[in-house]
Length: 130
Image (cartoon, rainbow, N blue to C red; front, side):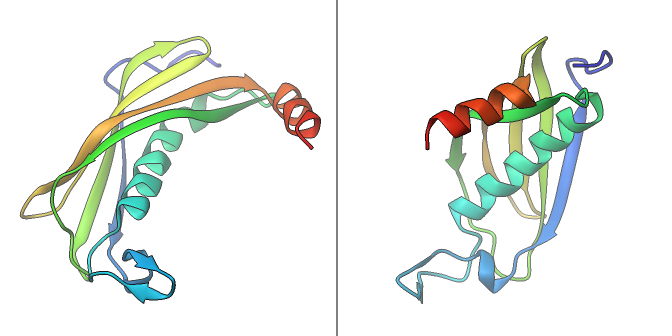
């Protein structure tokens, strides 16, 4: 990784909850709120924004772990902001504290860890798994 990523750096992603972000199983919507899956996706996106400016051309980030608590609903139409803040920055690993909130509540929080690896090594591993 290129230098410059430091503990405390903050990235955000802002969305408006839409119907396609609601929990749905077998084609049936469970309730008209942001699903946990969609919340995790946007938390990962905020964390990815953290590393993108610092990756070398030959590197890529890999999601290694995410641990999230879903705390409150975010109804369809609600604007939600997702935050990722760098907590641990190592040459090959970045751990972010992540959380999401809207105007009435914090809706989720946790941690997201990414490993930084050479692109060719990632592709070799993918190829070897075929």
